[in-house]
Length: 116
Image 1 (cartoon, rainbow, N blue to C red):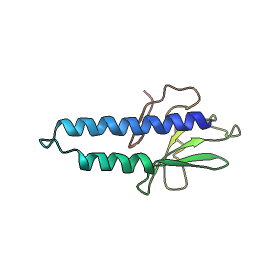
Image 2 (cartoon, helix red, strand yellow):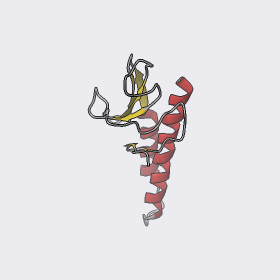
Image 3 (tube, rainbow, N blue to C red):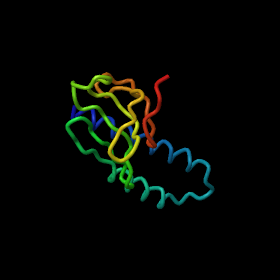
């Protein structure tokens, strides 16, 4: 599960980098110092905190990116399911946004997306 969490964080960071690239293409300035500082701060700030029921993914700016189910004993979700954050300490339990163990999830740096 550790490897899959690290892959999820890598995917989040890569999506942030892609978003920054789109923004950079629309700027007239070629000085990327501010963008590079923002990227470095984002990348170093994203982390996770493991709990009994969930793994909380933090985005480094004081908010929660989402949660990953960390138990086989959940009545609604499977271990590895990605859940959107409903608040600091609780996930939105309406539907999974993918599963880190199965792969094939669709995420953005801003948070998990609904599956289509």
